[in-house]
Amino acid sequence: MRLYFSALICLALGALSGASVAPERPLMVEPAPPVPLAGQTLYADHCASCHGDDLGGAVNWRTPNADGSRKPRPLNVLGTAWRRPDADLIAYTKLGSAGIFGDESPGSGAMPAFQGVLSDAEIGAVLDYIKSTWPEGVRAAQQRLNR
Picture 1 (cartoon, rainbow, N blue to C red):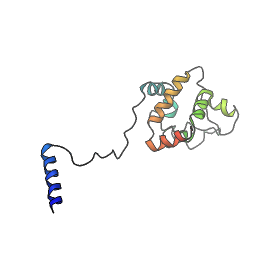
Picture 2 (cartoon, helix red, strand yellow):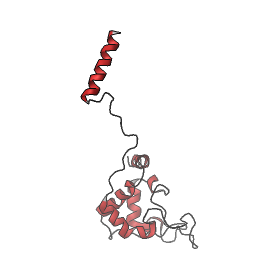
Picture 3 (cartoon, one colour):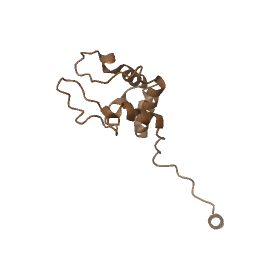
């Protein structure tokens, strides 16, 4: 009983002094990373016209074009970019679909090559911006592909 009474007094004194008796609780939802501004600007200038301002891809992106080519896919979590390691994303951005699949590959897209248009650092900034829009779990899954 004496121990119970002593603990009760300590709690009361702590409350009166303004001290917190409850431990800090960690955030339940991880905050989003800051948006890389340079990458966002480059995305708007070079990518949004095909992939959308919201990274949502072309309208009806799942339906192929009349010639069988693919429409620009989303770069958000609805697309497949997060399922590729950085090296693949960088190569595809630099070389475009023709550089990766060849000019006549059925089902390839019309992704232009950005080698000579964007520097390696600029391509990296765009990819950082795109990744910053993905939820933490998706970013972590994509990062594991880079190991």
